[in-house]
Length: 89
Image (cartoon, rainbow, N blue to C red; front, side, top):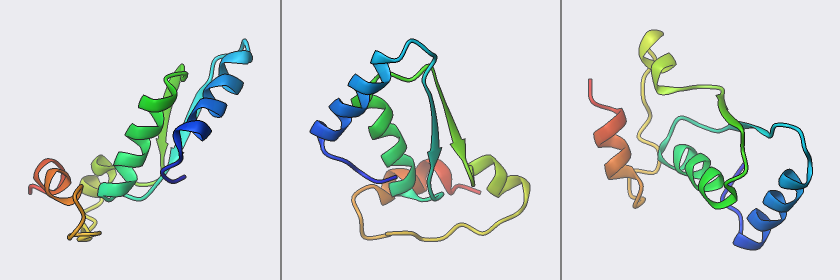
């Protein structure tokens, strides 16, 4: 999963809303600033999901298992808010 264009988000929304079943998004991403923002962006721009479940590593799992955080893309614009909210120990 990565950042997609608005036209792609519109296609996803149209296809999902055409199906009468509940729409479940399984968001597979890294525990880093871009991974979380991609999930947020996808949900926000499509607006069609009954539920969203993050698959793979979450902040809570990282803490529970004593895993080390990576710096990720430290120079990126998403890094400062991610570090403030997620990497405080």
